[in-house]
Image 1: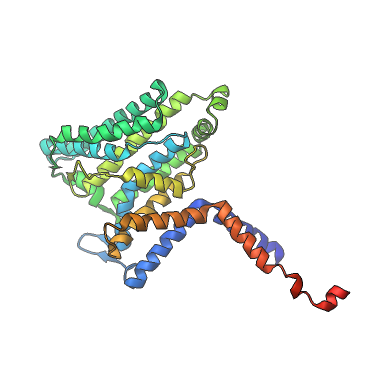
Image 2 (image 1 turned 30 degrees about the vertical axis):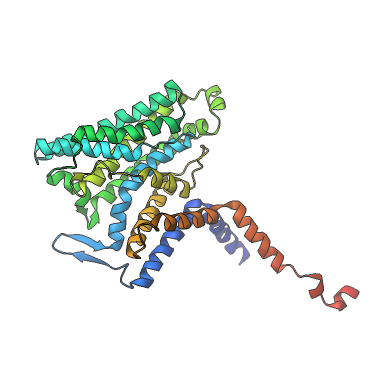
Length: 359
C-alpha cells in the first residue's frame, strides 16, 4: 500500500506546487458561486439553427480568447525581465486598420484576408518599434512601451479619423462569431496559437535562451546568446499576438471603438501572467499558466456582471480575488500554514500522561 500511495501523493504535491493549479481552483470556485445563484448557470445547450453550443461557459471561452493572446505575448516579454504596456493600444490600432480597410474594400473573402494581413503587419511593425527602443536605444521597457501605449490610441484615431468605424464582412466576422463542431472559432484559434507558441519555446532552445537573458543577461552574453535578437523576437511576437487579440475583439462586433477596444487589457494580461506563475523579475515562464490566467480573468469578468456587482466596486472585487489567489500561490504563506498545523499536531507537555513522564 505504501509503495502505491507514495508516487500518487508526490504527484499531487507536485501539482499543488504549480501556480496555475490555484488558477484552476479559482475558476472552479467562481463557477460554483455563480451556480449557487443560478443552478442552470453551467448548462450548455445545442442550437440546431446555428449549429453551435450555447451557454455561459461558451461565452467565457469566447471572452478569454483575446485576453489569452495578449497574455501569451506578455509572458514572453516578461520572461526577458521586460514589460509591454502597449498591447491594449496595439489591439485598438490593429482593429482600426482592419475595419478601415474592410469599410472600403467590401465583403469578399479576399478583403478579409487583406484586413488580417494589414493588422498583423502593423502589429509586427509596432512591436519592432518597442524592440528598437528597448534593445538598440537602451530605454527601459516600462518607458518604451508606455510611450507606445499613449501614442497607439492616437494612431488609431488618426487611422479612423477619430470615429468608431464599422464594416461588414462575413468571412472576417466568422473569425469571432463562427463555430467549429459547436465550439467558437475564436477559442479554437486561440488554443491552437497557444499550443504553437508553447511547442516553439519548449521543444527548441528558444525558451531556454529567453529564460537565460531574463535571469542573467551578462552570463547569457558570455554563453553566446544573442540578447538583442531575442528581444526583437519577443517584442515582435507580443505585437503580432496583440494584433490577433485586436482582430478577435473587433470581429465579434465588426466595429472598432478607438477609446475602449483593448482599454486597460494590458493590466489583465500582466495579472494573467503572474497568476500563471511567471515572475515579473524575469526568467522562468509558463505559457500554459498564462493561458489559464486569461481564462480566470474572463471568468472573473463574467462573474462580476452575473452577480450584479456595481461597476464602481468591480476593481476592488477583482483585486480581492487576485490577492487571495497570489497568497495561495506563495510558498512562504503555505509554509506558514504547514508550520501552524504541525504545531497543533505536536502534543504539549501538559498533555503527556504523568505515568509516561515518571517512566
